[in-house]
Image (cartoon, rainbow, N blue to C red; front, side):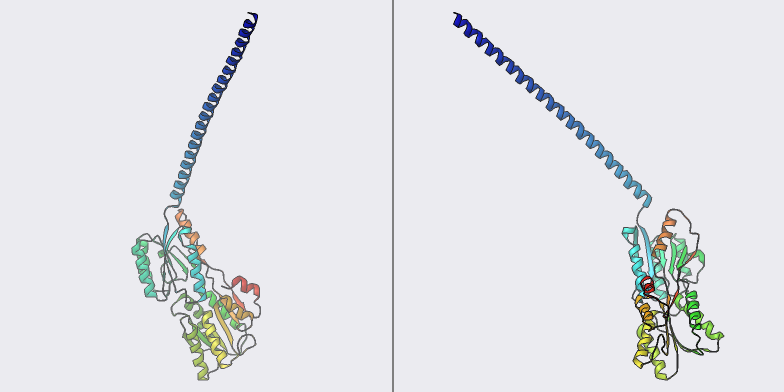
Length: 366
């Protein structure tokens, strides 16, 4: 009996322990369920917070983008009428500068027109007016003939900005003019030539395209000097239309005629290069210590190297980098500002073969 009672008591204890163990397992399961529920709720809360934060960020980005779009607006449409970029090293540098500025990346929708003929440029300008561009940027082939089309542009709310060259038109027809002072370039060159102290100046004058601002300015100073000084003579005065081969032919014709000369005044570097080719062919010395003074304009890097080597004597600077000036003007107008200076003159200088340095070539060569 006692053994049976002991057995029953032992069994009861085992069952009691089993019941505690079960309770503990159940408690553990409940805790696990609670923890899972808590984690899920926390995850849901986190996801909700992330979604809210993402939505807020998206809305903020959209608002910023909308603000940017509102402030910047659509692309600014510009029509750029320029001379042929193959005309000279100067013009190539000028066109490259404009192409780098006026593109979609910088907020512009630009179309480029090229011609060395004034009537073609005017026709291009009329097309731009009909297209309704925002701005007309103009480097005129000739100083005259622009009043009518610029008046049309003004009537259609198109802002006109001149670059590189001036025109003979009322200032009210354009917003601003970023130009070289071609007349001053001529004055600087002629003053330098006078400082050479020649007993007599017998000059082959090779001109730019007739009627262009460069030709008018660079010719004007020389013409005035020739008219006022008996010792200054024009052996020949003829246009080569910026072309080296034509310039070579002009100088070759003078050489063949037997007429003496000691100065070549070429109104751009390429024409000076052509003139020198004729001198070399005829065995005529030139440059520092030579029989003929050689003068050019534009300051191409290779032309300044000719000065540095003493093969040429003088080169007048003409600054081709006007795009940043134009961009600043357009931004000012787009923001509602006004342009204080109607005419912005590019700073320029002349270089003498006896004083030019490699640093000058590096800094000013184009």
